Length: 218
Ligand code: C5P
Image (cartoon, rainbow, N blue to C red):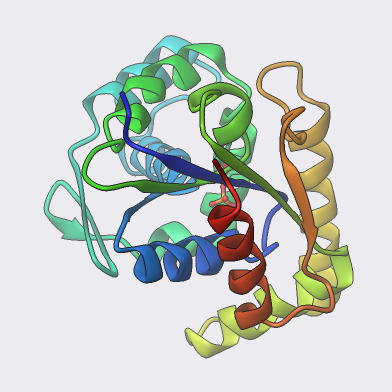
C-alpha cells in the first residue's frame, strides 16, 4: 500500500495518543490507537470470563471483536467502552496478554486495515518494528517515568477516576519492564526511528517536532 504512515511508539503515558491525534488532525489523516485493541481484547476476556492463560481462546476473542471507533467513542458490540478500557486494571491485563503470539497475530491484519485514505498515524509499541515496518516516518516517544506518572494521574483525575501517584509510578514501571523485556514484539525503537524525549516538551512542541520531521521526510 502506498498510503503513508507515521508510527509513534513508546512507553505507557508518554503522550503517544495525544500526539498521534493532534498530528492526524493537522494532516487530515486517520489514527490507529493499537493499544485500544489490546485493551478491548482484555476487556472482552474479562466480560466473558475467558481464561487469559488460554492463548487460543484469547486470540479467538480478538479475532471476533466487534468494535467500532467513532471519534471519542469506542463501541464494543455496540456499547461505548471508551472509559472502561482506560481503567488501570484493563491496561494491566492488556499488558499481561500482549506477549501472546496468537493474540498479536490475530490483531495484525486488523491493524493494517486502518491504512487507507490520505494517511495514517499509528501509535503503540511495535508500529514501526512489526506492524508498519515500511512506514516513511517512525517516532519513538520517550518521557521519564515521573513525568509520565504525573500526566497519567492528571488524566485519570480529569476523567473522574481516583489515582495515586506512587502506585501509578510503580504499576507503570512494572508494565514498561514487561513491555520492554518480552521476547515477542518488545517495546524498542525501530532502527530507523527518530527518538523524541517529551519530558520537558509541551504537547504543542512535541506535535511541532513530529510535523517538522514529516516535512523533511522524502
Ligand atoms: O498503549 P496502551 O497503554 O493503551 O497499551 C496497553 C498495553 O497493550 C501495553 O502495555 C502493551 O503491553 C500492549 N500493546 C502492545 N502493542 C501495541 C500496543 C499496546 O503490546 N502496539
